[in-house]
Length: 395
Ligand SMILES: *Cc1c(COP(=O)(O)O)cnc(C)c1O
Image (cartoon, rainbow, N blue to C red; front, side, top):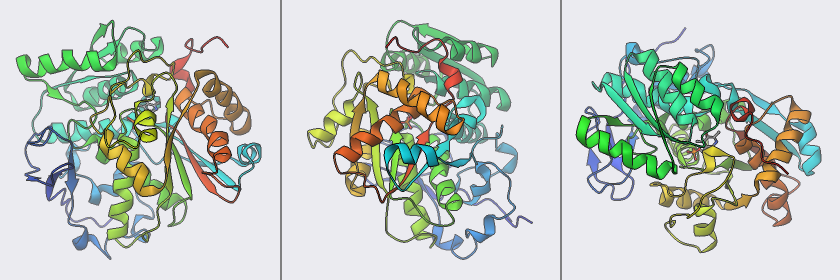
């Protein structure tokens, strides 16, 4: 039986750049300094009570971690079955790479076919709880359909602005989910400008990546699940396809929280960020040893989730890569497509190109001595290949 008396939620919000504290019980976007905010919890109070053992028999979605989530009222938890995705033992892929063990976390099984469901479930739940009525976001596709789905489930209006070259299945999905969809001949950053206008003129609440504090709280549950599914430990390396970076940043935050809860020690996996050669601002910043990334001009890749020329959380991603002893690498679209084929044949999973990208990065990381044959590696397949049907580049 679950024995959560009440949901404490977060104690406060903290600016990721200045450390300045903000109150968490009103609708808020960025910090006073214009930077992303992190939700903080009273983890001390949970120690010994919220344990790995206490999770046994809980609901099979991300709300199994509700003690470390910001939503206070259960009625406000907008749920469609997000999270608790399978961690698949990819023995044939491991043989292909020549490494000890490979797991694939299959995020394609989330509602709306991508891990964006995790973040938007939390962000929409919290927006509902704090009284927002009109939600909006720019998207390369998957965040838009996830926002549309959770908005519909919550009974809130959602405005989605996407580039015209967004995969057609995703456009159809967003329309079917009842959102107000605007197409723009440009990139996700241009779509952001339209959303900001709606925020200023019409009072929309902005759900853009890291521009409100709770999408990252949903994404961090991937870190909790990894530890739970691996029986209380972490792998040697995590390979993650990086756009706006919430997944990478969120998992790192989860590891920190779990250490404070006494679930894990201070060892961390090496975190590897994968981008497309046609849009690799984080890789370029990483190679230049820079603290921030500059905007990528002329972004081009069929992995729409990676078509993010500039990210507000760039410094947080670069910090994670550095602190973990990881790196950032870029792979070509045709390599992603090739590894989508291999993952499909090895595993029975039709991966998104972003998932293919993580596999394509492994031989590069092995060649550079960053992954060794002794390593246990987790790849994130962040979405379903079905959402990109018709987008495959000619090879
Ligand atoms: C959004 C997206 C990404 C990038 O995720 P971030 O956590 O924002 O870096 C990767 N893969 C897919 C399928 C996506 O939709």
